[in-house]
Image (cartoon, rainbow, N blue to C red; front, side, top):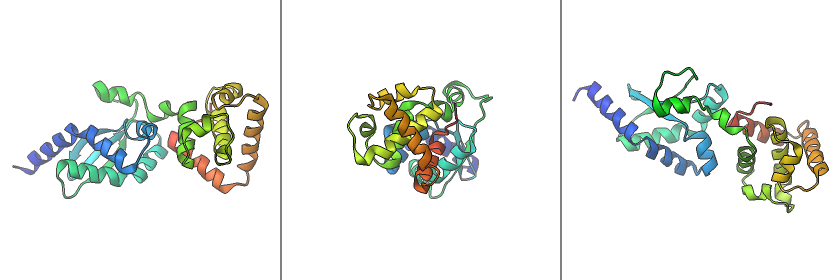
Length: 215
């Protein structure tokens, strides 16, 4: 078989097994369902040539591209290599503009980029919980937990800055009965962000992960 024929066969195998490849990456990275839906599920396989598998990211945001390459690149290389029986493969992530000429499901995905899916209260809460390694339920409960105080206040702050939810609505979703408590939590986080480097680092990681843009 010619080298071109082998490449076409490999491309066909990768395309056929693409959903399984993504699921393997999810398991290897131990991603939660929400993290998988945000970062891995929207990606689609484009082509294979010269030992390179090209994977399209339906987002034009450079930070999203850099995050996916850094966090999941090696896992995709291993998973694709195993699925296609390759000794060596490089994965190249490329971005897809919204003026895509793709058809069918790929075109549908390209017109629903990652950042459009992310700026909602549930996804922000889930991202904060994952960043701090706690259960999402701890942020939604009306019981106070020392472990969840800062993450919960940060979730409120991010929701107030990057979604259209009112403070009253945010507080209700996160188990607060008193609106003044919600407001004071936002103010406290705002002040801490001026001096707390670790808090700023965690917030920036969440902002990059969800590609948050102020409303």
